[in-house]
Length: 224
Image 1 (tube, rainbow, N blue to C red):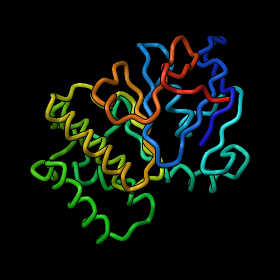
Image 2: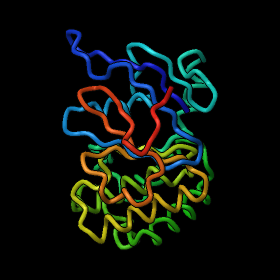
Image 3: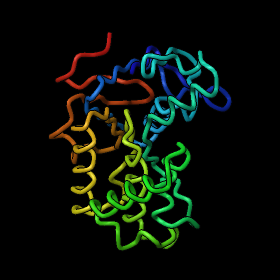
Image 4: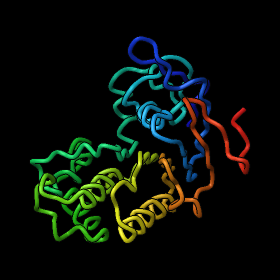
C-alpha cells in the first residue's frame, strides 16, 4: 500500500496535505503523529477511501482504487477496518448490532456473525453491554465498541484515527492488545494520534505530520 505525492485541497483551495508519500509495509505496524490540524484525519480518510486525494497516486492492495469500477472499489474498501476519530456508531443499534455491521454488509451468514461478534465482545470485556444501545454507553465503552467493529471482519488493513481518545489506562492497554493481536495475524496497522506514546514500544514505522507535510522520524528512512 503506497501513497505517492498525495495532495488534498478543500473548500476555497486551502491545502490540507502537501506531496505526502508513504509506504505501508504489508503486515507492518505504523504510527503517524501530529498536532490538531496537521492533516491526520484527512490522511486516514484518503487511505481508507472515505475521500479521494486532489492530486497524487494511491495504490491499495496492488490496485488503483480510482481506476476501477465502483463494485471493485467497494470490495477493496471491505478489506479495510476503520476506527474513526468521531466513532460513527449508530446510537439506536445495540453494541452487538454495531459490531456485526461490517459482517452483515459483507454478506456473512447470521451464524458466523453471532459467533464472531460474541467471541470478540467476550475477549474485549464488552459482553455485559452487548444488548445495550450504543447511545447509552460511556465514552470509553463507545470507543472500544468502535475498535471491535473495525477488527471484527479480520481486515487486511486497520486504520485508527486517535484511538486512545477518552480511554483510561486499562482500556488503552486493552486496545493495544487488540492492535497487537490483529497485527500478529497479518493485518497491516496504521495508528494516527496527537501523542503516540502508548504505541511507541511496538511501532515498526513512525512518521510525523506537520502542516500537511509528512516526515519520517530520525530512526526511519523517508519514502523515496
